[in-house]
Length: 312
Ligand SMILES: Nc1ncnc2c1ncn2[C@@H]1O[C@H](COP(=O)(O)OP(=O)(O)OP(=O)(O)O)[C@@H](O)[C@H]1O
Ligand SMILES: [Mg+2]
Image 1 (tube, helix red, strand yellow):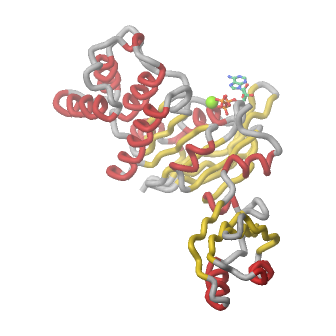
Image 2 (tube, rainbow, N blue to C red; image 1 turned 45 degrees about the vertical axis):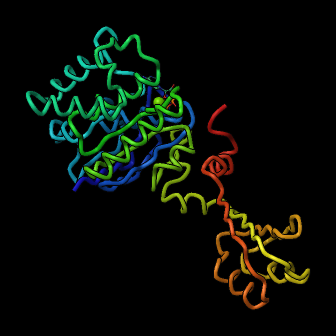
Image 3 (cartoon, rainbow, N blue to C red; image 1 turned 120 degrees about the vertical axis):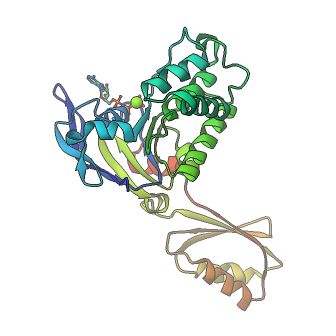
């Protein structure tokens, strides 16, 4: 078991409160998102979790054992992909992997295997003998992730691993994360200010702004905080004009709009039930061609909860 608990963590830098009573739990084997805009306190929180910073109050524990009492054990369990690249620019990719692998206690056959895996997974095959300083930002980011994964930590914390990378490198990193999560049941804490990344990867998330909790829970729980959340597009054939009035009566529906004679848009809150819509179509002998439900994006949720966008 590897249940990570962050309990009532507060952190000050001089008189500035940077983390204000932060609590959440990350279950074993989940991909957990930590989101917030620049300066929200994400890196400070991560550095507190891994023990690089000491909190002014609160505790971090794994399966009930606090980090402070078990630091060596925790260091083996937790890996970090730091926000700032942690690579030796004057060494080749191969030598970086060897160097960091040895640092994590790998040697011999195991070290070789893990290096091959890292080269494969980061898409660096054929370039492993080149110096890191010659790599593009995206390649460096991929190697940065691979290096942190060398010792297969049970919990990996990634601090904005995709900053400044193109779609291809981002896909490599995402595939890597999904693979280790699926095959090794690695717990992943994924930090980003790209909401769409967290939307794709994570099942549960914590949103932080100005050191304070904005929201915490599953994606649906977080989204349900925003009222009138769903837009349902109903495509149907030859529905009578009266049908529009009928669907307006469905519970949760606040407004209805007809688009080009064969589409009806329903604006509804979370109490909307798809079954009810389908039943009403059947009762009125309206044949459905398609239904599309748009939930708000996490970006929209963040805007609605804080009044500002995640990125400038
Ligand atoms: N060593 C430090 N001394 C004083 N203030 C600090 C220090 N480190 C961070 N801060 C401040 O703490 C706040 C949170 O910073 P932090 O780096 O944790 O944010 P972040 O969410 O990781 O932001 P980003 O998305 O830019 O990486 C910021 O206001 C920052 O200026
Ligand atoms: Mg940061």
